[in-house]
Image (tube, rainbow, N blue to C red; front, top):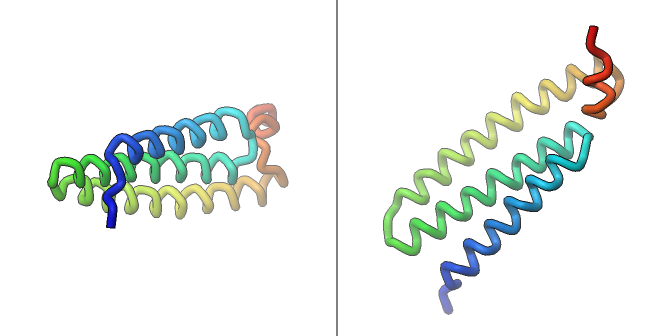
Length: 102
């Protein structure tokens, strides 16, 4: 099995992170925004795994487990908030929600 070069893995992680960031900034649907954060967290996890593999340290895997835990908590809390927001305001558009203040 041919190992994947370190630079390719970091490039893929960077592309995924940028895609998640762009989607987070452009899209206004709360669920899409949550998925964008998930993509960004997975990209960061991939970078940690690649770095840990490159230098032969288990720290990257430990950080990835931490990121997985944070992502699971983020999804649980985020989806709960999205559900409550939808029940209250009948919309998931972040721009419309910011107009409803007061």
